[in-house]
Image (cartoon, rainbow, N blue to C red; front, side, top):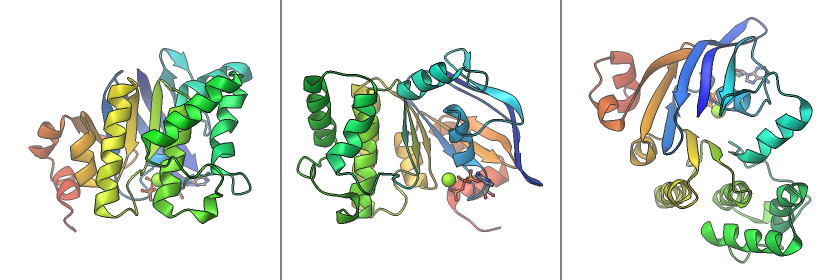
Length: 241
Ligand SMILES: Nc1ncnc2c1ncn2[C@@H]1O[C@H](COP(=O)(O)OP(=O)(O)OP(=O)(O)O)[C@@H](O)[C@H]1O
Ligand SMILES: [Mg+2]
């Protein structure tokens, strides 16, 4: 379980998180929605200690992230896959090298590394790009490499930041399948940040909405569809004020 407990974060005089609280249960997919700039990526970065809270904290399986010693933080990061909003691949490394990096850091045997590399690229439907470089791939392909890299580590959690943004509708539906399969087959608990309501309702077992730095609403897709809160409705239905 991931627990966000009264998280506060400001940058300069801009308050981004103002008491954000949410429990992400183990298993299934929790989708986090909210306006651009609301602080969704900032929330994900707190989970792996890339950003430290001003007040409040995040717990992963009962462990407070902000007070972890360096070694424990490294171990935590190994158990959490992070699919960044912008693929964040190393441009000077091939696709295979990008994926191997984290596996080698885990000290796995060469045979296991090779197998994980194959399997993860197969899962995302990119079995023949090993020796290409990131800038030789399309944006959608780079996103899928980012996913392969996360899956290869066999994490307990995967944090997906905007996995379908900027993709055409067909690729985006494929991405939904991929996330669903990852969650089901590998038993991963997923947290997905997205603007894409079609995707949110298709993959979410729960949907949470962030507004004004706090949790505005959370529920099953069914509950969120029938919610009274006008701000949430407007957001879900994509209506301007
Ligand atoms: N490291 C940082 N330093 C300063 N400001 C930051 C930093 N990271 C995020 N911010 C600011 O925090 C706010 C929230 O950013 P965040 O990236 O979490 O938004 P978001 O909800 O993910 O938006 P989008 O949907 O556009 O990706 C923004 O105003 C952003 O400029
Ligand atoms: Mg973001």
